Image (cartoon, rainbow, N blue to C red; front, top):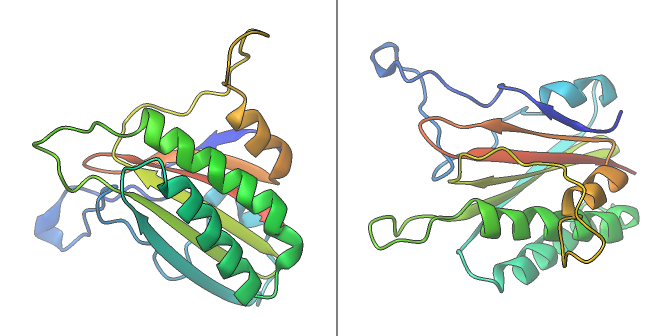
Length: 179
């Protein structure tokens, strides 16, 4: 099952009078038990779970920090067989978040990227949030274009990937890798 699957299981209602949570890319953390809806068919009942989240500032060196965090987390979980693939996926998604999801202005100093790794049995979901509203696009760049293949890399390394909007702003882009 390859391909981007937009879905809305992270979106929360803006109706705060009923006590509902209001998530945005500025404050989203994976809720306990969270897993991308389109990837739920991959899960085995009773799978062990764990999660780790890292906040990244909007700087180019954050891509390296994201890779290091992913490698350390997977090593700690004893899932080193996913290291190479996850480092590439994290690198591509973090780069896309920096390039396409950030609007660096003086009036929005809190903008950050969040990287969450969620383990469910032999699967690990990587979710990256950013404050941008544009959907990720799997495109076919020209042969002389210096880039544009990042989501093709993510698609080739993952069991599935997708994205969802966050309210009132932002989005989460995720990919699931299997050991």
